[in-house]
Image 1 (tube, rainbow, N blue to C red):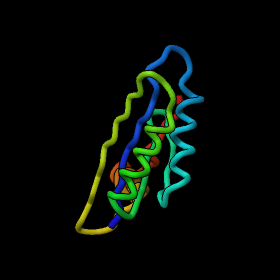
Image 2 (tube, rainbow, N blue to C red):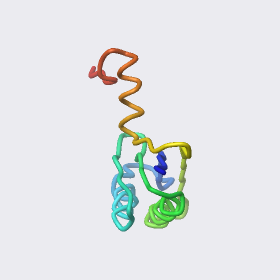
Image 3 (spheres, rainbow, N blue to C red):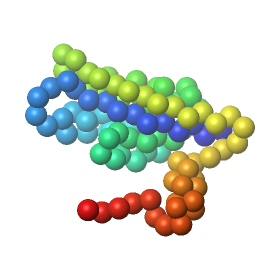
Length: 103
């Protein structure tokens, strides 16, 4: 089974959050997950929900601050394995092109 999730962890502060967000992303390296960070969060793939929740908890706890906001959205497809890239490829197949546009 592959569990795919979108994780967003950020301190509630004024100014740049990059330093603290990088701590959350770095915390994922201690787990058996793959991930890709984008401007709105980090997509994580894990073999189990246990590993996913442990990684998300570590990312949350890695951020310093009086207030931390964490959002976790999970796609737990139990009938078959599916990688995050496959989901993008399916949309691109329907579009007939890459699902990306530069301004």
